[in-house]
Each structure stands twice: as C-alpha cells, then as structure tokens.
Length: 261
Ligand code: ADP
Ligand code: MG
Image (cartoon, rainbow, N blue to C red):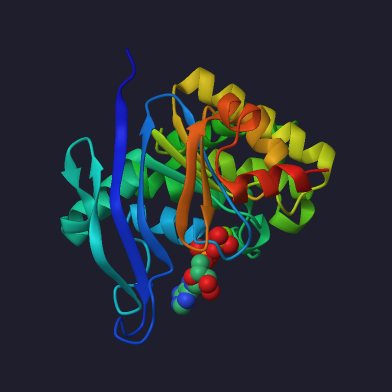
C-alpha cells in the first residue's frame, strides 16, 4: 500500500500585479507518495522552482500571489497555514538542496560551524553533542576524513564535497521530504553520478520522499518513480517513469525525448 505524503491541487502562482501578469505556474496538480521520487522536468523557465518553493510558501509574500490551489500536506493546507506553522514544517520535516553549493555555504565559516548551526536550529543540539552528530552526518554522506573536514572552509572542498556537505545539512533534521532543485547541475558528470547514487542510497536507508527537479532526462530515467513534465507553467504530462519513456503522450514530451542525446 502506498501512502501519499502531499498533494498539490490546482496550484497557480504569479508575480506582481495579477491584473497585469499572467501566472507562471498554472493549475498544477500532483501527488508524491511516501518513499518515492517524483521528478519535475522541463526546460529552464517552465516553473519548476516556483512550484517547489510554493509547496512550502517560500516565495516572499510581497512578490508571489497564490490565486488558487491547495497544498495538502497530510491533509493540512499549507497555503492557509500560519507563518509559525510553516516554519515548523520546514524545520522539522523538509530538507532542501539547490544547484550551487558555494552560494548556500557561508564562505567565512568552517564546515563544523555550518552543520552545528543547522543542528542547533533544527534539533536543539549544542556543544560536543552537535559535533558528534555533525561528524556522523558527514560520514553518512560519504565524506572522507570527516574529522579533518570539519575544520575546513568551503573553498578548501571540491564542488562534489561541498554538495555532500549541503546534503548532510539538508538531512540534519531527518526530513521525510527532500526537495532537490537541480542538485547536480553545477557538477561534472562523474560527480553528478556519485551525488545521485548517494541520494538514492540515502533515500532507501532513511525512507525519504524526494521531489527531484531537473532538466536532464537521463537523471529522470535513472532515479524517478513518477514524472511530471512542465511546459510554460503547466504540467502537460504526468506518468510513471517507465510509461513516460516507453509511451509519451504529449507532443512536448515526445519532442524532449527526441532531443535527448
Ligand atoms: P525553472 O525552475 O523551471 O527554470 P522558475 O520556476 O524559476 O523556472 O521560473 C518560472 C517563471 O517565473 C520564469 O519566467 C521566471 O522568470 C519567473 N520568476 C521566477 N521567480 C520570479 C520572481 N521572484 N519574480 C518574478 N518572476 C519570477
Ligand atoms: Mg529552477
């Protein structure tokens, strides 16, 4: 029996004055099952990141409008939730990783400080306890010489190692949902593989659900269970991964698949 973690229903999101600007996300609906990976795929500007950020209402309220829709997280509509409730859910249940680790890590702080800060915020861990947990997390994401790495600054790590640190931080709150927005786009192909294999392994070990955002169909093919294809703010096709590659129904999906190297 599969269990639904969250369901997005008829979500529309726009920026600025709704009378002047059309929404950039239009009537988007999908569900993510527990323990599964759903890929949101589509070309740049199609609305993938806005959809992911809207899930937790992370877009600044003065910019983004939510003209319609519901985000049901285990039955609770997050679009109607209070700011304090949203903070609680973001902090306790969700981890996020983005494309470029350098912009997410503070260049002035050692790795230890960045991870322990996250642990303090989300888990109330301090001092030696936080350090021990930080070490465990670095080991979990396969960083060699983890003890030494704690003392390093971000620039002393390779891109792949920085992304592993970001994953460690995203896991600090033991999330049930991991949102990975182009998590390997900035990395070399071999490092990409390693990071994606790591995510898969962690997902199996920890039982997380993953919302994987990418424009790369090869990644989708290897890692996704379900796929939503976005085009100009709309989901034009939604299928099981194998079905999508075997028998795409929408012309845009066929075009994407034909263009695949
Ligand atoms: P993707 O992640 O698929 O590349 P995005 O979700 O980032 O695309 O963007 C979808 C559309 O929304 C784009 O046209 C983008 O320019 C617009 N957009 C994104 N963020 C903002 C913002 N903060 N203010 C105004 N427009 C935005
Ligand atoms: Mg994006």
